[in-house]
Image (cartoon, helix red, strand yellow):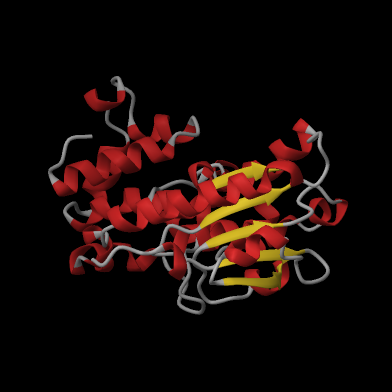
Length: 262
């Protein structure tokens, strides 16, 4: 794979209600643009560094689905997209910051926070990290494997092609009304739109676990979920998942399927 150079990495400054303002120091980047958060959330794919300006505004707090859409893009992107939340105020409200970062709990390594005074340094750092990740990123062989695709296809909505919370819950033999809480949602939200784009980041980890169905029958997969596992401190995979650590089980499944140590 040819390494990505800094000149090729897009740097987008996104405003909330209007196009983002490109700082003078950012004009030295060859691929910089001004956009809005709404435009970003509706793009088919994203790449590069995304700087969300005025991240501490009340509007963003009222419209978390915009950030949820960005979290969805972080999940589905094949490139190491990085997000910089720009809080213009010198003092960041810890509660407000926690509220926003919860949407990216599975992708925190790709999210940076910066005030106006240190934004340049954070963007430069994000560019460097992006370039290193681009050099090391390889195609995920599991996601391309025919058996894995067939095993996880039942988890998708026929209408949208996205993961369906109800279908995933069924595969894990968990009532979807109970599963809604596991993915940080509500029974009402899952019941209305089980394949919501906002649910995709959380469902992604369950899809990784369900890849084990490529080598196990449904009954054996469910038995594995309910059997104590030495690699999980003798807890069952479902116990670990219900405790909020589904990514640990997903990593274990990947190690089992690829034959690599966890």
